[in-house]
Image (tube, rainbow, N blue to C red; front, side, top):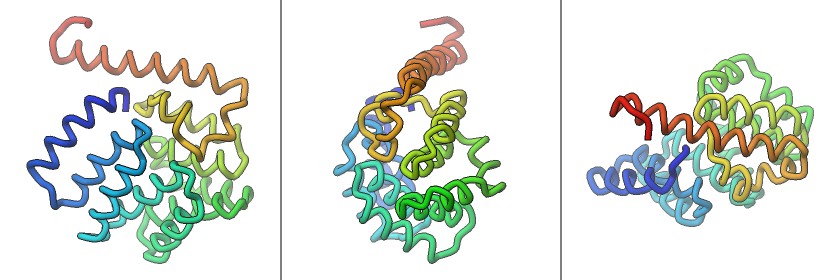
Length: 204
């Protein structure tokens, strides 16, 4: 997400139109996470999960909790999700669980699941999920690689990665981290420019 402030305004409009559908609440919470307002995001997500405990809602609630550095609470949330045994959510929860347990080898094994890798290669946000799990478990090289792959697609929020995400805290001293943030900022500009050209036929 390259422009979370703008995304928040659209999300609020969507919530006014449909305040009850849980996936709309998830979409509305995502910009808040990217702005570092995790308490607000969590309050919204918890209410959505209470209305309808969909796997997507439960998963992003756990991700948001982990991003805020509430690791014990996040572990419990991922454990509840894992018990439901639902496809890709189950695989992602397994990677987070191993990471939050401090199990580096287990995290690396879970993050190598072929279906999960294939999914992440198609989805910039999923690259962030794998990077979080691997970074917190101590596999910094793999985490940086997944963040780079995500930035090559659409995951370009340098502010979230550089300032707010506690799961990625171990990456910040690395020499590669600064260049990665600069690349994310560059990619964010390129994505906005491309969208503007597609819509208006000219550059900003």
